Amino acid sequence: MKAIAVIPGQQNSIHMQDAPDPTPAAGEALVRVLRVGLCGTDAEINAGLYGEAPAGSNYLILGHENFGVVESVGSEVKGIKPGDYVVASVRRPCTECFNCQHGRADLCTSGNYTERGIKGRHGYMAEHYTESPDYLFKIDKAIKDIGVLLEPMTIVEKGAAEALLIQKRLPSKPRTALVFGAGPVGLLAAAALRVRDLDTMVVSKEADTDPRAQIAKAMGCRYFSVDGVSLEDLGKKIPCPDMIMECTGSSAVGFAAMQMLAADGILCLLSVTGGDKTELVHAAEINRDLVLRNNVVFGSVNASPTHYRLAIRALKTAQKKWPGVLAQLMTTRLPWTDFAKWFSREVSGIKSTLEISS
Image 1 (spheres, helix red, strand yellow):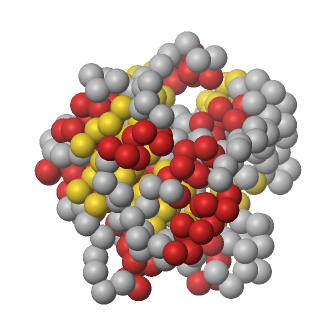
Image 2: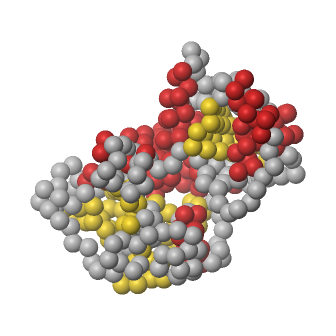
Image 3: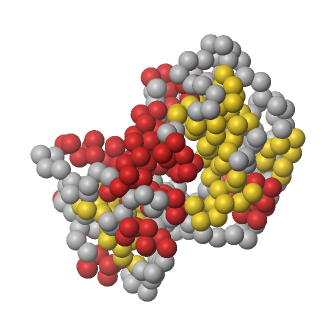
């Protein structure tokens, strides 16, 4: 079969190559990949920043945001049948960590987990893959057009669910939320908060007329552009939210968000910042406010099976409340043979996908 792969650690090594056809074991399903989503992680692996090939392989098949259809199942497979639309999870547990052995590979403490398309396990930018039903999640036909958004939706669902869990320390419930960033993760975070009926604001650099702003408003969010406006000035104009989800990838925004929380508020950091840029922050003031306001700041990455199920429910609810709106995130659908156009930044938009099979 054909697959899109990199040589981990080698800059700009992205290429299409022949790979062995996968053969499902008795307890596995054979899945034909329909499309994969592209994200910054894929670009960073191709830049040689990280990425690890499976043992015995000198290449890594990329791709973790996936959507496919079951073609066949082994004799021991239950709960999955040919024709089912599925999304496969990304992370696999290690053998030594307590959390991994109790279904929470997303909270691995050893660092010896593996991740499809990222760390020690081939990904989904291929014509087929095999997988145990334990890691496959069925997608209803009602949301098959946005099924490829499930994996990034699990990230924000985990962040939102854990933030609300932490906030159970309070007698009151959060009512207002703010999302920094109107990229794919930011807009999915806004959707996750809106389906929970939180009064949600989205803050981003794009103009009020940008498609990102229009998607946010279509979901009932208030949108604020920071084009030409400092975060400090913005903070004086909008109410302090009970919850903030930071999705920009900017460390400066993360620290600014700490100072915008309401008393007893919580900040969830979802973006991974790279580079070696330093920021000048008012450390004493930030520390004082976090303490005196009883604020909580936490980071979140990856997701558990529970969050995949929550994400499926959120996508179904969003599709029912705002038909077709989340599909507008996918602005660029590339034939997968044109993968180089995305990695060389020849295309732009909100979310790009590679269309692998019809």
